[in-house]
Length: 191
Image (tube, rainbow, N blue to C red; front, side, top):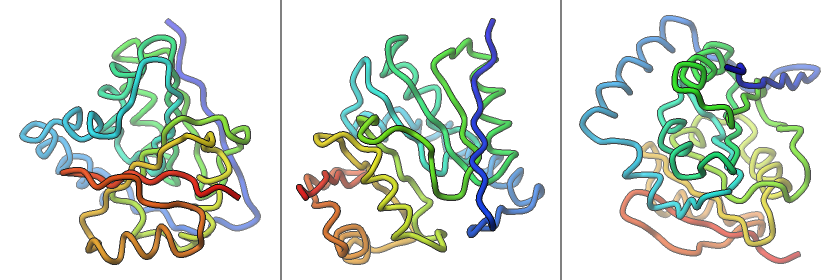
């Protein structure tokens, strides 16, 4: 069995600080309980992921969405799981290896993905945005990597709806496509 690929994107100075190992482990444990009662597949179904899609899970944390997304994209799809925390990347790699998910690639970075322009069909940006130091830089990077018809699936329970809509659309990069039960779907604005 092949191990998942990993990219490390370095910058002069990491902008977003990673949480401590103890905090990360506590969060991962809490998410396991949450995911048992509210499976992540129910959330990502709303995003409209289809077989063959390339999906970027930006701020993947302990990999709550990796298995669900892998099922939806199938063997012909690809999942890029990005996080600033090396423990997150390590956890996702372990999930991928244990489940034989050969279409998962991890990226250790705090903003840049090093993915090709317009190479991603869908970005998951879940419960991360409120914590970003350079949120505008992240939105610019997501705009760059999304295909013209690509979707930014957004959820952040730390933010109210008006804050979500104004922050994501304020720079003119994205517009709201639809509001779902659990997520907001944004599409790229035409240049």
